[in-house]
Length: 375
Image (cartoon, rainbow, N blue to C red; front, top):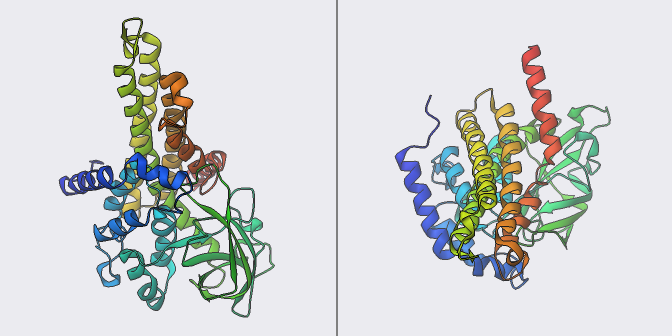
């Protein structure tokens, strides 16, 4: 079995890397990091023009109709560039939820807008601290309206619509949860931006006050749909993390070759070699798990739940490890605002909490393997 990407997919990756290298240099990332912009609107428009926003959206809904393997290679390059755009919230979460559970009318309304860059979407799941759980969802749905608070919501302050998890029953079972589609610009929703570790990935608090909502999928099927969405997003986000890991490794390697101490490059010292070697190993192991996840995602294989959890775990560990040790290789300079190391460190630690913590996905992997073996 060959888990590598095809030549066409590699060409797409090269095109994405070239585009992002030109259009998303560190200076552009800093514009958002410094608070001069909420996100890079020019980059968002460019991604749409290149067809990257709709790469996995069927042609009938305005997308490129390529597939999830192509989206994986785009995700990796987005991670390498540390792109300050609402790509993950819109493409991995909102679009995937629509593709899985949306009606034809809902798909026709929102998917073409996503592909063209005309709409930003998000998933409103969390209601404070903690990991994904049906018991943690308190926001109520009643009479076609929603009332309650969701936070943190990725890119919630700039989103045009949201897929919202709400409680529609009181049986104490997973079937109490349903999904709804809410137009955030139609009224009844207040958005408040939250301060977070990585300002290039915005978070918000959304307050729903009898906001009009339409069901997304069947009533009582919300948690089942959410589980599938989170697994798909876990693979895609893992590719972003691998891209960030590789870039952090490259930054550390390049600095080690250029920085001279005691008359020789610091990369010639054994301690620095060991740090870089460990970074390479962690990034390579994560890539292996991500490739397995990409295969499972693209074929909708029964192994997807385990593959998604494994990819998420290894990629999270690799990105945190590589971004941290990139700073160590840079020494005192690595801790300064002027160097770019902290941007990847911020992204690594913020992403580690997205979709649930590392320990959550470790528990998920164990539980899923145990159930599979029992069957």
